[in-house]
Structures are given as structure tokens and as C-alpha cells.
Length: 366
Image 1: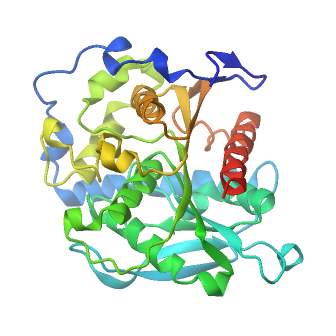
Image 2 (image 1 turned 45 degrees about the horizontal axis):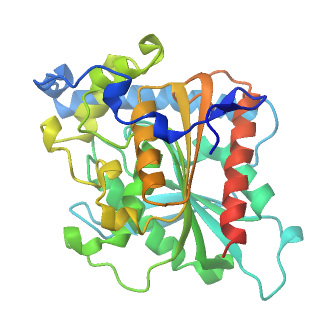
Image 3 (image 1 turned 30 degrees about the horizontal axis):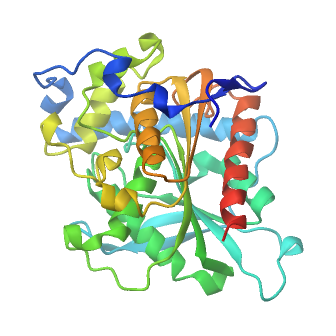
């Protein structure tokens, strides 16, 4: 990667060697754990607040998907079972599916790649259709079948339920390979914000299921790569440190929102220094897993409290010789590619194209 090379879309290719630790660009961590006032709220009240945000977000995304260039709706929705962890059940997880048109079907002997995507929303809101523009880009550019997973949300289903749902979804989608004419040796994972965490965490679960005594039958799919947009990767860093590490703390997610996210997802509360479970903080995965990680494309935002930990993760991947590409969208805050505004930003389509170019290079190398 070239150091500080700009393109015409206001994005910089970042040399990860510039960032040795979060302390280089932010204050030291607060020694005493932050007392989150949302932890004092009853779970039903957290659920009510989360539901209100879900309704607002759903309205915004519905408008956003109808604005600007047209977006194709999912071809179908499938239902999957939850088999891992405490909250098992039949048909509890759904996935929106985008299937390329019949006119673009590959030759009979050739199977399609599949992209399994996980939406954002701080683990408390969002749906698979939030990433419809990304799904459309993948279908049109790669001829891939795209699955966008509707995992169960906190506070009703706190950590690790969403991680387990996503791992379950991957396993069961791959079992449908013949139905969708997909190649289980060409499976890609993608995710936005919380979905980027879940993409990485579910890969970890499938790479090392015995660590948590998960019973996952063989064979497991082979993953071609991960595309991660502005993911949280390390929950051991305090929110104040993350916020103040940003060039524009005023443009980061407000504390009221992050308090709701943290209290909803991490329940019962876990002291900050003990949030080292790599399903929660996948950026802390041990070297033995890091060395097995497939290629990674990271797209981060300049004015995002998650920028520093994303850079640190990319630096660690690079030092281990992993194939990694890193983009930082200048002048933009967290989830810049999502509504509002209603009209999609040109830079979002541009970054999607860059990510897809990385995916094509991985597929070509198989």
C-alpha cells in the first residue's frame, strides 16, 4: 500500500505502519470503568428504546432504497434454524437472497460464488435489506448469489446470540449450495459496522468451534475473503478513548446511542478489561487464527471512533503477511454510505467498486 496516496473520491490508501497503537492518536484508557447509566434501566425499557430506533431506521432505509438509482428487491427470503448456544429454535433466523437473473447464468459446469452479508445497527437494529445497494453491486459485478442475514437482535438476544446466529446461517446457507448453484469453495463474508464484527466473529467460531464447545458438523466451507466496512473490533478499549482518538469527536456516535448499544448487547455486564472473548473482540484473535484468516478488505471512515482499532487490526494483518487492503474515506463519519442523506453518495458506490475489485482479485487467485 502506498503511503497517503489520494484518489479523486477523497479516499486515502493508508500505510498501516503509521499507527503503532491507539495511544498515538488518542488519550490513554480510563483506568476506572465507565459507569453506563443504561445498565440501570430494566431490559424492557432498553427494548422499547431499541424498538423506537428500529422503526426510525427502517423508515429511513425504505426511503433511501427508493431514492437515487433503482435498487432490486431480494429475490426471496429463506428461514434458518438456530442450533448453537442457549437460544436454539426452528426458523428463528432469516436471510434475504438476491439471485442473478437467468440471462446471466454461467455455463452448466460452473458454479457461482456466494456472498454472505451481515447488516449493521449496533446489534440492536437493522435488517438484511439495509445493504440492498451493496447486494445489487455484488450481483451485477460478480454474478454472485448474495445472502443478507437477519440475525436476532439485542437486548432480547444479547452477546453471543447474534454471533451464533451468523455462524449458524453460514453453515445452513452452504448446505443449500446445490439449490443456488453456488461453489462452497468460493464463499465470501461481508458486513457493515456491527455486521463487520459478526462476519469476523462467525469466521472465528467456524475456524475454532471447540473453543466454545460448539458441535459443528464437517465439512466446513472454504472462505475466499472478508469485506469489512467500519467494524468495531476491540471492546476492551473504553468509549471515551475511542471517541477522543477521533479527529472530530463531535461527529462520532453520541454517547446516548453507544450507552444503549453497550448495555443491550453486553448482558450481563462484563468489565471492560475482561471483554477479551474473541467472539466479542475479534481484533484480539490469537496469532494462530490470524495466520489462517483469508484475505481482508477494510473500509473505514476518517471521523469514526472505530477508525483507530480498524487501522491497528490492518497493521497486525500486514505484519503477519496476511493479504489486506485498507481504505479510509476522508471527511466522512460512521456509516457514511447509509441514509440519511436519502440520495446515495457517489463515494459509496465508488468504495463498493473498490471492494468488489479486491474480491475479484481473490477469486481470480483461486
